[in-house]
Length: 252
Image 1 (cartoon, rainbow, N blue to C red):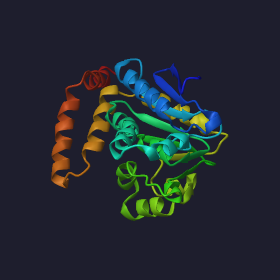
Image 2: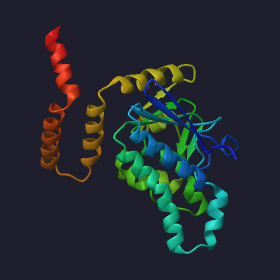
Image 3: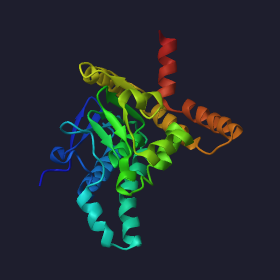
């Protein structure tokens, strides 16, 4: 059996490619296991500065493997909750990873595949890509991804997306804040490479602090957010990257 994900590391950018193109990169247990392993290794590898997730073939990811979903009908609620949390662990690990995680999306990112993209810190998309949560059409609920989707696009828009199951174009996804940037297919690779190489050259400590503060602001009051910012500000001044940058400025 082919590896469920493949990797390539160049210039500090670790590209993790979902590798089931014949199944539109549908996520099964083996793929989730592989993603968790890749993310764990990326956190421990000092040569990895940024992680990119892509899909092999025409699509990013069509969501969960339908055969596994069908088989889950006969399992207990406890077994199904544990199975769902297995994928949820990918979302949690991506959020906790002190390095940027960027999705580069071509083709379709649907259901859990759209959730995987939503869990990333940035989403760069081909103008022909499409995004959606069509689970409702199968009598299913995109339950875990709502924790991220609601934060990304707000209450009304997130309810609309999951309750109707409608599919968005890349332009529509950009307009509501679901994704970060959209490029034409002729320039996507070049533009993505510029962004990724820029992230890889940036201060690792500053990026880690930015990511940590960015998500810890959830649920905090304005005053609590400012106080958290003061703590992060103070911490950033103690880093080697900051001290060396200031010294270079004065050495000019």
